[in-house]
Image 1 (cartoon, rainbow, N blue to C red):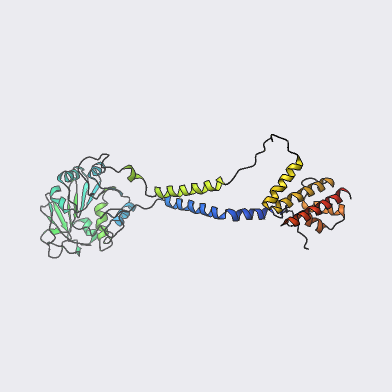
Image 2: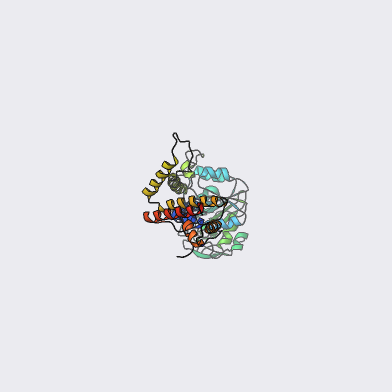
Length: 401
């Protein structure tokens, strides 16, 4: 029979457990639940993180697709240009004013009131693939049909405009024709008519710049030739850029509650997922805390219960639950406490001191005493009965040495 090792750092209680083994048992019982809770919290945090806003609208500054224009918008933003993305003419009226640049990027036809609203802003106009608005905004330019120059090709500036000369060469299709002396036309195509090209400028207040094709502005073509240089110089003349891509339901009426975004539109798309994750966490927490009865509360008994009856009642509970270890721990704790008091030891005495004192008083080997008082817990009724008898004999020897 091996002698139990008694240490000060890990005292052994009557049922054979230590603080470390009890903590390990609790960890084994709760680790699955804790892992679930931590996983749900991580999912909720990841779902709540802001995600980059993107769209699939052609030529939109938040569209990362090949036909979008997010690359140009991001470069402009890094150069200090504030991009205001709008899709309604009422928002154009509110954001565009003299000293800003108004980009109209769409081949969608607008009615006369909307075109008049664009001109009334007083902002410098940049028209990309918006030839329908040229003749209604100025008498100096008009868009030519597709037969004039419809193939995307590399074109040289061939003009004195500083923006066009800085770009050098661009890739574009289509053409804009100058109708008066106040217009400068650049980047003529092969076989184009006289005074026509892919880019035209009408100086004045406001300034009007027109690009016949959207290819230089799109993500897919921005890096080709000098497209980026021309686009950034055309759109970055002022600190504020109003980026207007007309929506299908855009009207010339004033903005009101019926045309603005609804409350549902303003709610982030991640809110339902975060709410579901929080509900799961709440359900798990309710199951976790609902199983606990809380700390024991001492209440005065309505009748006096004799100690013998209480002892027998506890013993029946231990027997019904087959809690041989707890019953043995109670017997050992009572024996050790009484023996220590009999031998003049304090209640806070270490197990090693109790074992040494009892061994001296009874003449037994310290290993035998340690095995009786702090050994492994009993596992059946017969072992518990034998332990109770041996403890009674040991206490009798201490009481009557």
